[in-house]
Length: 63
Length: 509
Image 1 (tube, helix red, strand yellow):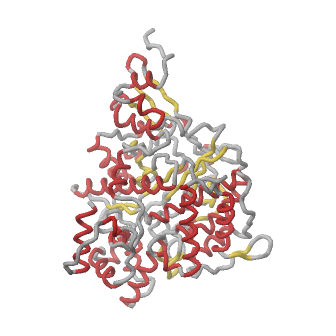
Image 2 (image 1 turned 120 degrees about the vertical axis):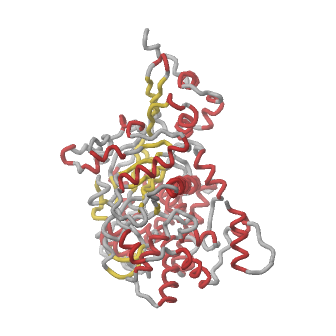
């Protein structure tokens, strides 16, 4: 599942035609910039009704 | 000379939810989760498939056996439950030799036995893929179920992420307790998974390092579901009890960041080596439980922890003492040991300089930085439901929804494994342990495998009848020892013969 998705994500983040590194090179290379871009991405996947989701996330105790 | 190599395993109890249906029965859904994985793969799933003959969860490492009448029903893990909910119990041995089953009200993946921290990382993560496969299978049904590799709902309930380490039986249990308590109280700074809210029900505003700390109530004890102890005394080795003790660790958090899982197991294995060798540092906390909570609630990592001699140390200082003792006695020739020490060292240096420098390695830091950035941008306080949502959704096993997976895919969290390696670990046993033989039996013997457990296989061997094959030695039954012998074998009789079991007589003789 890795290589194609990785390539697509790199393009969507960069938006340029710059050559894309293979996933091996991406691993371990840490991006600490663009805080906003990751927050935007997270906004896009967060469950829509936070209050309701949190209220409904009820577990029985385990070990 | 200390080495990290040791028989180890990890356990993940998944949180689960049926979207939009908070009243769904979690026992039933847990069984659906397990069966959804087992069914399409032709794996047997039933309570009777697990061989309970050798289980003894009420045996206590301090040397006594708990009276059945004194046990809470949740402790009776060895008795097939005959109440109305028993129909929902499911028990599967997966292709890689792991156990996937219903534990109380949660699906649990117990990894096959491995020998190195690096293999724990792979086989623990393989369990996340097993969970993900269940979620995918149930997505197509009327009642989809989502899984979260986390430890609490912040409404008073907690569920475990356990570690198992095989320890030399000759080691005095009091020494294990004395050595482990200060280590476990402070280990959370290396491998906590972080949590929004303070207190069991998240009644206090804020963020803390460990997701489990607030749920612990005792220093030492047998229980795992109530009065949870820092050191659990369950003495159920699943192996030759004269040689081994299985240390069952219940105090860890569910780590998703691979470096954190690696250090969690690697550092603990080394500290156990120190204890076995009688070399553990002598640090006695005045109030271990209070210190456990204080460390978890102190993001500055500067809280002074009172020792019984009246002095104080911080969590980092205590970790430095343990690290120094391990480094001093470590085998310099052993690559696995050197790699664990290097990563542990990197964590301690990063935590001392600025914990945020480890947002790429430790879950509590990654989550904290993410939440702080989000909080700042939105101008919201710690009790805002969006932050509680982020806390839960960080642990969603689905790559398209789980925030940990988003961060990792974006290159913001270091990774040690590859996708291909983890996928292979879902169906292949690890190297070096009896998990190979268990995995072989599951994959090759079909209906002839009647039941299995950590230390036994029950085989239907035709004319020889039902044969129980003990596997008391975790270091036998390995790929290295058996691969050539069992090649091409597809019947229980042939397997027994290949293993040298030749004194059985046909049952009609």
